[in-house]
Image (cartoon, rainbow, N blue to C red; front, top):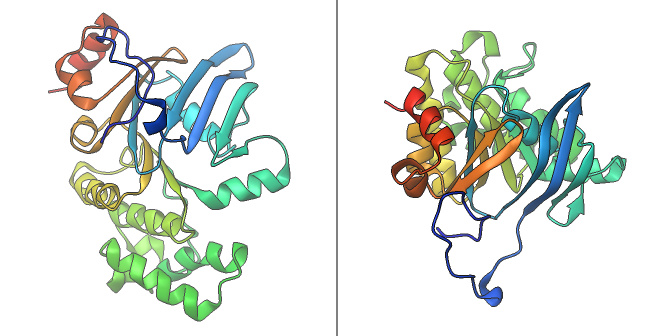
Length: 266
């Protein structure tokens, strides 16, 4: 799919789009800055994300990509600039935060499942507590989601009885149970053994095919090539380039990015 995105460094400038055809972004970040003490980890980050888009954020460790992802649902508060999600500006207002976190799901590196709850209860907890969904309705919806991620037979097990890949698939189902408009993934396969990575990526690919809006921080370049609509490259707290996968991987002119790709793409 094609979206209006910031001009990629080193790319041929495309004709300006017809304003009548430009969609309103689902998420807008404008001049976002974030400090941790004296470390300036996000530097004037400006970008947009659109409904049904799969944006893949990559970059070296410490480049700011995960911090930026966490600002999109206020797990990290930005110091300056603006972040607007579905028309709601992220700030300290509790009502705004509650509204955002109902609409923006997140899947972490570590699965963060409640060990004392069954898989089914992990998935149904938020809908019942936050949205007030009746137990029977929540259970039925959760079983549909567990079937979608291939874990319907494990509904009554506890997390310790599952592999890492299975736990991460439960975590994805748990996020989907809140019917979010967008899912954030923070290196969802980095804590997995290599043989378990594929099963999680397959679920993510299925979500992308279904039209789920996804913003994914990952080192899985094959996923970025195959599924991403846009690659966003972070370097020292800034977005150095945004481009479609074919242009990013095959026609790359930026020396810094070429050096990065040379280290991780085989």
